Image (tube, rainbow, N blue to C red; front, side, top):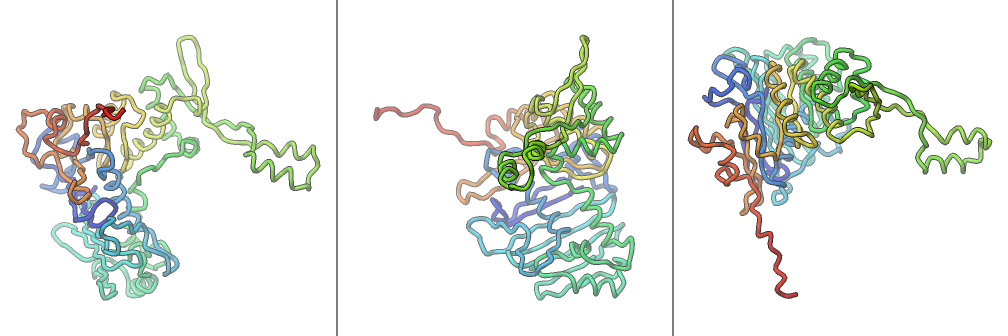
Length: 422
């Protein structure tokens, strides 16, 4: 779970901006909405990003995603650019900086990386287990890489990792391209946790892949089917079917022009067998079947969201979801948020949203609400928390945001059009 993240010189972020996911002293739904990762440290299960269009909400999610990607994705050729160097438009050529503090259960990790288009300039990864703070590794600006003594790596393993770490990727990411003799080290555990537990925006975006996975995992299949059934879609089951359909026109033209096969054999090649998802709808008058392409957009989006909810509830992980309410009825969206917070253990869900009505729900804590606003003077994205504004506890968060007390809203001009010249 993330405790704090900061970003500097990345996309719409210029000067360094911080966002905290640590709970304040607010007692609202404390047990459901927060997790005590160690005595005295409570982290939010959910953070909700609000802001005008183009304010930087998606960029913040992408920044968090990029940091994790940097940590586990190596480069095989030293001439390749560093992954996702996207500086603020007025600071091109300057380094990007990411920093994060996060917990894996009760173990705390602290990481910072500075990089430009060609190389990782510096990075430092530490952990705190109990009261002891120790270095996993540090890479200095003079290109030295130093490992801590408590990581559990032998001298030969350290040598292998250092010799295979190119300037255009992080030290931790080297783990995926080398074989080391040591097992179950701090280095390995961290790499595998990020690889398995950090889910990027857009993950599980292909419905057919979800259905194929569910076909092999009965628990997942039942979870999604039960979710669809309980959410008033009249859907009681789904399965994969195969259908013949026409090949793309371009492919058919290539087949015809090949002049190799007979006309009879060519006719059999004009079609292809494709896998499709078919849903069973049950009513008092009987059942009927619909393929995925005939379902509503809301049904399709909910099908994909249910796959993410399965991970969030049964596997301690982190999900980033942009436009969480996309195509969902408001009541269904609320139901999914509550299903997550009431059933998950150590998972974290960070979402962007536009629906202001959510702020009027009694389970929304002020420290959950993160505001992203673009400066009129510098065009840089700036980050705030609703709890920073010290609003009176009786003041409605919904009303405060609606009337502009919290900012992070579009400043719109008149809706009247001047037709005086006509």
